[in-house]
Image (tube, rainbow, N blue to C red; front, side, top):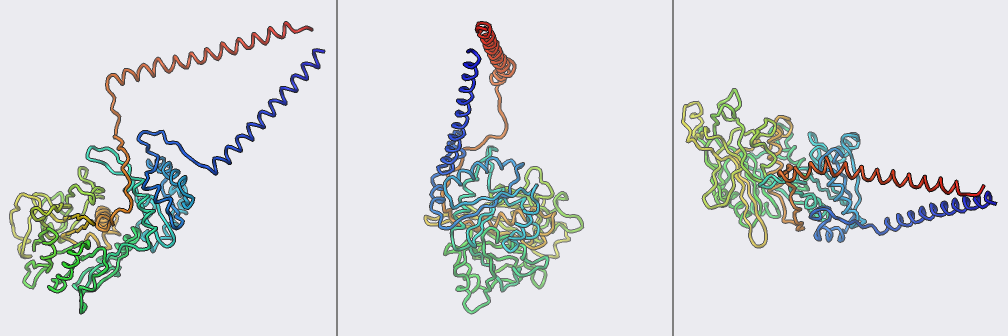
Length: 502
């Protein structure tokens, strides 16, 4: 009878095992269905790095239209893992957000298709997925987030994560039916937005569009120039070839006093006898807090000036500012330096709070007559400022201004020549800084991540004990325990078999 009883016991055990496996599978399926309908995440990271703020949650929960994100970060990118975790938190908050990931390395055709799709929206020639991290779309509105906007370095060299702020700001912007309006003034020989020649601004207009900035030409040679500038968020004057009349200057000054952002790219103007004359915008630049000197800057440092000239074309030295953070300072690599040609000196007025962006070396000099270019004139042994930014904040809004002593930074040649990467970076950063609208959300900054690994003598000693003693001892103890238990089970099974009646 031992045989049938053993067989029945084995069959019962097999049936119970099968029922257990089936029950576990059914429970797992129910858990998956429940999790898909009620998704939640628990963030146990330091500083709640993967949890979105209340401001971001409010924006996502109040989405009026569906939003589509196209992520152009490759898995090999250092930001990919952090950014994917953040996107999962966004997806868990709202069902009106869809996400598509395109790997530029493994899916070059898809990345190229994205570039062609937004050809008219700013991702034109010379721009690909390498500088765009995310494309945010909602209806006809688009917003582009660059890699440089996802992180930043503080004064101590620590990495600050700005992924949530950049992403939430972009989502909030595409919900707005109106783009920021940039008015490019014409009527005094300024560079044209429609000019595809090397000195034109077609490439600049194309790149401004990818930041949801609407650029348009606004002529001032009309009967009422003060009315032509109404409704402009920012006014840009790029490379005037003739002095401004007083009526036009008053219209621009009125816009500045009303809170409009202003960008002035002022080349030196040469008079009939070779003298450097005023641009006719002295009152405007003075109201901004700047003095645009009627001069022509010549760089005498042979390591900065281009060969074959008199020093009129040279590499400028950047100063610390949000606009210049993508430019090389210590290394001064050729591909990230700003090349100026035919520049005038721009000085900040005392007490204005204006910040110098670019300057010459201390060997540069400035002349007021073109005939002085070939004459030996000693420098003042001090750097000459060439570009200045000014920001003033009132109780209601922030107002920004740029005054730059050359307009060659904005032309098509600067965007098309691969060697002028520094010019492109500076120009795009300058317009992004100028046109930044008041923040729609207030996203708190994540705790910074310190670059590098700092270990004390005690930490090294503890690490040595863990690596050489604790971890091997723990593994050996676990192995010994498993081996001993298995041996005991085998001995018990052998004894039961021996005691069983024949």
